[in-house]
Amino acid sequence: MSACPDRPAGPALDVEGPGAPPRSNGELVFAEPWESRAFAMAVTLADTGLFTWDEFRDDLVARIAAWEADHPDDEPFRYYRCWLAALEDRVVATGALDAVTVDERSADLAGRPAGHDHGDHGHGHGGHGHGHSNGSTPSPN
Image (cartoon, rainbow, N blue to C red; front, top):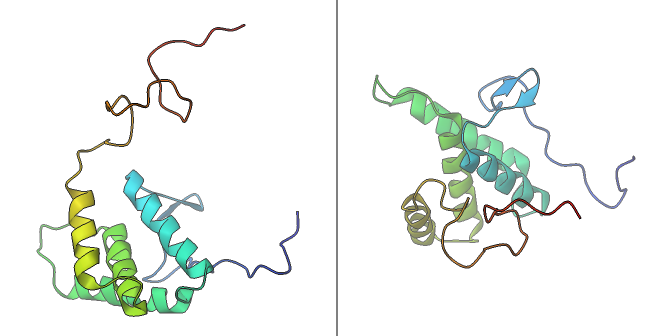
């Protein structure tokens, strides 16, 4: 299948260097669901033209360098924490959202319980077919 000539190619991800995302056997690796979501948001926003991939990559490299220069000795490096911070920086820099709004939305999302968007979470999704299970096994008819 060939690429659509009217659609520009997506961002070229670094394979090596400080901006390169974690990989295993050549495949991107995400430790938690929010990491893949943050990744997809950055790629989508760059693809739609909100910012260029080079602008985002520069913000990401700057965030990684800042973490390397000043982090507690017992704090492990979390690539996608830097990714998310760079994404927030870039969205604010474009004027799409202001820093206060980004902080408020981040706090709201961070305050949600783990797994809030999976399983039976009691707000009327029982059996209407968008990926949640109601605990019953479908009939093989």
